[in-house]
Amino acid sequence: MFKKLMILVLMMAPLTILAQKFAHFDSGEILKIYPEAQAAQTALEALGKQYQADLEAMEKELQTKVQKFESEINESTPANMRQRRQQELQELQQRIRQAYQDNEQAFRQESQKKMQPIQEKVYAAIEAVLKEGGYVYGVDKAIVAGLSINSALSTDISAQIKAKLGIK
Image (cartoon, rainbow, N blue to C red):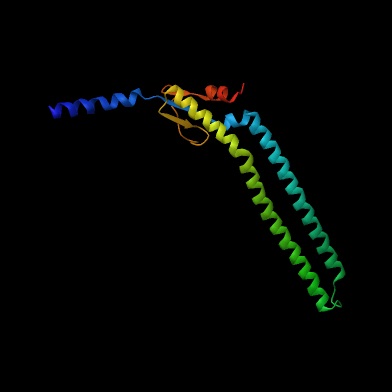
């Protein structure tokens, strides 16, 4: 009796796999058209341009000082003056490197601060659509690049996710 029950269970297992519902979506495409994400991206681009302009101004200042150093310093210039000017140039180079690192870190933090709530809203909408539709798995095409998805066996739920987010 036990053997018959086990055989029946093993025979039914493939059928339960076939009965499962699979979904796919493209979070990258959804984020591209999501107004909140677009606004955050625009703000981040403006911040990036500001940081870039600041660094370019500092590099221009360094270049000007190097040119001035090269034109003013010659063999008759005292060694202590030459050394002091070289020290100033090295300190300015170090400040530029530090500013670059600080700007990069500040940009990452600002990006995280702006994008995390948006991503959480998108993933909450995805979870809600998956749950409402009774889907077992949801595959994000933006993350699994190169993976082939059989559209006949999987449902594209991008439209439902957009509707949950209020995207037209």
